[in-house]
Length: 214
Image 1 (cartoon, rainbow, N blue to C red):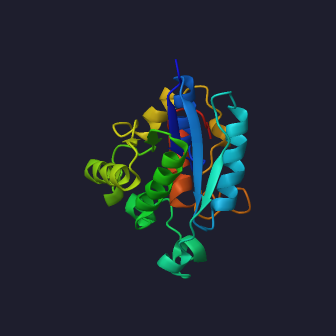
Image 2: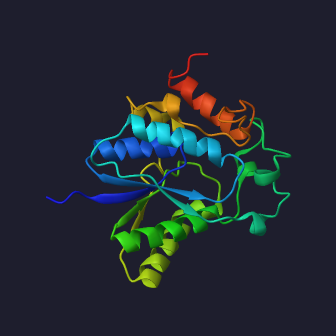
């Protein structure tokens, strides 16, 4: 029987890393895809993502693909994601990290990637409580319809973790090398700053699941 193929939008963070690990364990042929938009944290993300993928390597895990899609001209040089000023901190609400149109860009690029390679499914690690307008079921359904129509190829957009919290996602992927997962808005080289919104979120989840004990 031919294995089911899926493209996973990978960032190197806990959620997408857990999704890749879980899909491989379920027998999928996984195509990890990273979209480079030029954000200040991408070099560190790519370093840790490659390490994570190397650690879980199986015949079903395909080579990491990367697509360039710079957005500095859209968001502006002074946006915190490029300038590093006013970086959302761990005490700030989740909506403070909103990047306008992020999933529109990611899914548009992933859709073309999948159509060219005849991959019928895109998976995103969207969690319960995601506050962004481009993460709603209504948006995802509309985007799926647009991709299918515009590319003349049937692609299903799936969000397997939409009903789960970060803690639940990590618990479902027991055994994954989460010490190699990385998510930080203001890294120091390849090291997390430990103060930003994403660092706070990551540390809290790891402590709740007892992966990180101090």
